[in-house]
Image (cartoon, rainbow, N blue to C red; front, side, top):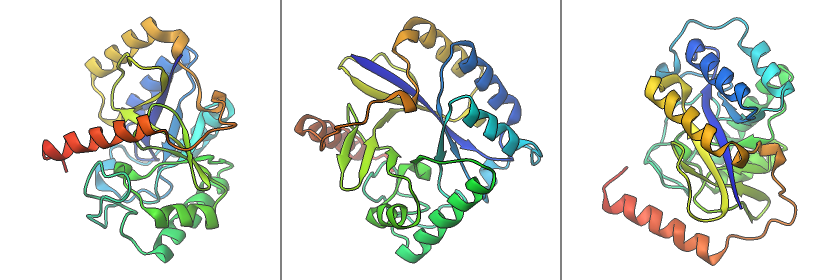
Amino acid sequence: MKQYLIRLDDACPTMDVERWQRMECLLDKYGIRPMVGIIPANADPKQKIDTEDSIFWQNALQWQEKGWAIALHGFDHCYISSDAGMNPLWTRSEFAGVSLAEQKRKIRDGVAILKSHRLEPKYFFAPSHTFDNNTLIALKEDSDIRIISDTIATKPYKQGDFIFVPQIGGHCVNMLLPGVYTFCFHPNTMNDDAFNALESFIQKHKEEFFGFDELDLNGVKRKSMKDKVISWLYFTQRKLRGIK
């Protein structure tokens, strides 16, 4: 069985409202409930696209009320480290390589901002996918979040106190192996072709799409040897291609 999930990155008051509305209408049309990653206190100039939306937080609450999964997407989305961490997709990070005290502050303050707007984040993922063991300690000690959307595998697995729901692609692909696959989208930068390709894929595979809160995470086990091999091969080929 294949289960497809959609994750939306970089929601914040200065996002591209028109593109996000287009994405919301598309997903609502097919009854798909994604995860949305919210930047609590955006300071990244690249995410300052529109003027600040005065009703952003009201809209975010409506997302939650209709079953969208809310994720804490870092704190300010600013890269302050060149450490790749434990999920080395890129050599830039808001978290990996940063002191535990600073990471705890980011997690604590980020969760507080979301909760001040009546949002309840159950999930976490870091900007550029990069985080380290201190991030996990900070999440454990300063939040109730125990599910992370990231890393390479074919199905969710447990590591220590956390469940990882793997994120394996930036566009929709019909996967060959059974598993749980998260497709990550950045509505702020999507063009017409990207939106059309997403809708075409959904039309063909609608029955395979699920919401994050529909996943059965009871009894999740440690990462399998097969998934460890897949992860090693994935990062090895990135290294050989010189992707940083």
